[in-house]
Image (cartoon, rainbow, N blue to C red):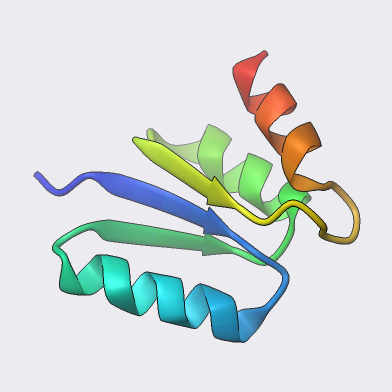
Length: 70
């Protein structure tokens, strides 16, 4: 079973590049456009790794990581 990676970035081009690279390496990739969407997707299912941007509208990357750790 492939490892599941959640990528969270408000830039669609960055998400696309990261997803392409990770999928090419055999990972399952879940994408979110901001911290709030990332938190919802992470809580909806098991993820093995979260890659997040720091500066995003709504919820920034550090707040997202703190919320996931709770």
